[in-house]
Image 1 (cartoon, rainbow over the protein chains, first blue to last red):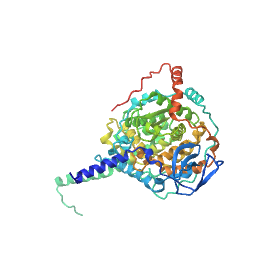
Image 2 (image 1 turned 30 degrees about the vertical axis):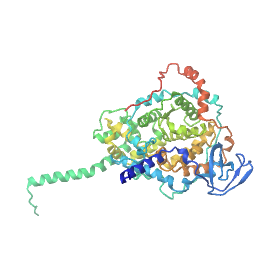
Image 3 (image 1 turned 180 degrees about the horizontal axis):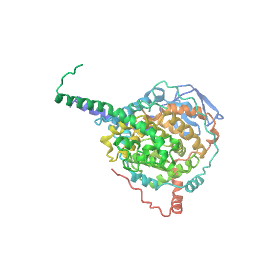
Image 4 (image 1 turned 90 degrees about the vertical axis):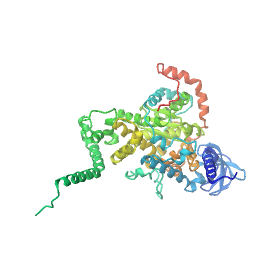
Length: 201
Length: 345
């Protein structure tokens, strides 16, 4: 039997749902070099160079990290280390990441605008994280707060944990504040309809 | 001079209608203006030690209304400069916001993980500017990737975030970021801004169908809390929490690159991945946050990044044997109930 238009739509929806439900790491290999850099045989600038990596060249993360250095593999199969901040994602080059944010905000706006009939795209995906809808419908649960407070630890317990974990406190100076990012477009988190009457800072 | 004869009987309904119209049109503006006036006035009146009429007085039209609930002077407090809110009140506000978050997702039912995150977070908080707050760390039973804080020392991370941390330094970086929101009082600033903007009455009104809370002040706090966590903080506050959080994690002995590594996970999330939607919607783009950190960090902290990574699973295993002894030694009389799934409606 030939699929009618309705079953086709259902199928498409099912596929879309399945795609959304894919684990996050399935998409994390779409890494590219953001700034031209060297591939090194060890983490740190003392590692020997295995070759230059041009901006935009694709790499695959191995998941290994040592401080500010991460291990990657080139399409040719060479593995080596590059500075973490020199690696980006393909999605981060395109404004795609912003789309996720704005779609989230769109649903947020309708939640607080009293539009009760709205279903957000994310709630149809089957698996989703805590989202604006959960928060909009939250009823206070003070009993759970009391329960959480019973899990508090005191300073002495924390110090004992740190000792067992060989964690030592260091003197670290405050980091300098860089110039804020150029506000080329309305950034995420600021464009909710609810914010229009709030002067940002 | 002459008047146009209109029969009295016809005139009265017209006047009544006109007055009603005017009243309807003015009502929202009046209420908002009075909110702001009351908020500002209470700056002075609070000093005299009188019970603040504040918003509850305005909204009920009865300034001598008896306290309708524990929260009523919290709203009055929000009118003041955030620095003048004393610690007990700050904790009280935080407690109510924590109840909103725990109303959206329950506690993750694993006491060992909750205790681990409390020890880790408490250790980091000890290196912060406010080491003596009653810091409370909570793992939320949620598959999404997110973290929250509330005034007075409440910090939340989702189980989904913990599962996606490649090592402990990433979780430490996230906790340090949230701890910084608390120490810098970012949430109080944001709530105050909303209260002063006159948005509060609209927020309360728009949530009437979901708030289900009898008393007005409780519903105001609820409205503010929901607004806050769904909307997020100011961008500049997020950048500050990143920057100070990195330094705080380093101060606590962790690899300072844990937070940037966690932000790379956030950045790599596929657009539309529902596990990341809220975190992305309520924060500046991860790309910008990473770029700000790259500039702030330079190679200043590279000397502190030599430690071998420890996974959370390794740490949980290592502390498993020590945990009961510690708990028994320090908290002999706590009513440590087995962590049950909290499904309160």
